[in-house]
Figure 1 (tube, rainbow, N blue to C red):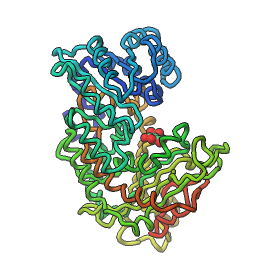
Figure 2 (cartoon, helix red, strand yellow; figure 1 turned 90 degrees about the vertical axis):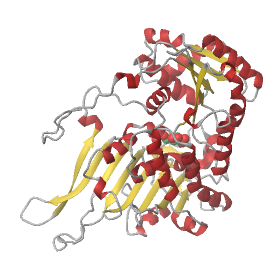
Figure 3 (cartoon, helix red, strand yellow; figure 1 turned 60 degrees about the vertical axis):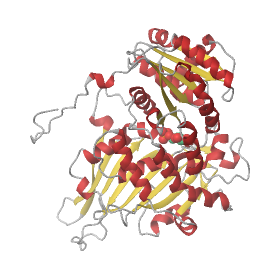
Figure 4 (cartoon, helix red, strand yellow; figure 1 turned 120 degrees about the vertical axis):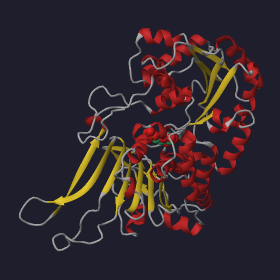
Length: 516
Ligand code: BG6
């Protein structure tokens, strides 16, 4: 750290992280669903990037496990093609050589005990020993949620070398379909694995600007005193996508927007904004504070849901000048589908800091553009001193932009130059790309999360109690909507900001969505 941290000139020193913090033990990763969509699009290209950037140890092995019969060689070819298609960099022969020889494949069925014996044998042959002789094995669950119980039941058959293996599980969201099934799944997995071996991924937590929310809040002294009901009028969180459901109809039909985005990504964003300062930066201190937020979100009854929770489903429309079909007309979607693709809702956090401050959350597919941001809307000054010169002054708004622009901006009112007395809105901006010019590499969410798991750092992964608490928040909404038809569907045109009722949610309170 710099020794002149009190000087006014503002040292631009970046804290050094000691190298041993980043040392990663040799490991073996078994990817269940090793040839599926997630593996081909994200995991394998990410692992290759990490290898290319020399972030992986010299010794590692990756075993793809999936149902199709294929040889190691055929799997290597599949991986190479996936990296070429979905990776960010060209496949340089030297890097590929190293990666290629670390790839193996086992064909098997998730519910077949014998397949796990086969996997065990393969592990015996190829698992690389760590520095102390112990073999680090990471099991990545890149499979649709319905396969998880079978895998958790059979996986213990792999632990033939108990004592020699040090195992971790990486589990993709969604963890369960509701609180009850999440608890059941947990009971199953915790028979053989301890909580400190389980890494539940939410890729939003791997995004650089999402991690920055905590740094921004707790590394600066000027905002925290204002970060409460005395100064903040309300908070808005928008996760808007212009994409539709792509080729994920079967998954999406079972999931819908609340299970897909609200229960996980949005709840995590909400927690990062609303949590109390943790007593330290260790995983559990942070996860404890997040849990408290979920537990203090006001429970909702049906009346509340009908009034303050808005569902939507997109009709055909235009996005970036291109005509796109309605949800009903997407491939494999039933004409009468009631699945919501849009959500907006008003949440209350009943604790000392946030009592009376509404949190408006909004997300949807096929909206006007892809944008994720959190905006903190401050109260008006206590006295409208300038009311004679300007009827309406914009309140201060702090915007934390997550994507597509990774930036922070503060909206202020200043005097407009001239002889009159006019207020003029201006922005103070920090933009990662512009301000940190040069060779700054933004790790992709999966890069960061995979490395953290290899290091054994659970900070950016969800703990079981939080998972259940997040389900507890959204379960009543899902139940209400699944039990009451939505005759108004489809109720928003693709390329807009969702149904009119979502706008009413804020205008009824005398507020407005910042992005509209
Ligand atoms: C995933 C959802 O978790 O997040 C997808 O399953 C969604 O439906 C995606 O499109 C959005 O992620 P990002 O990083 O593009 O905002």
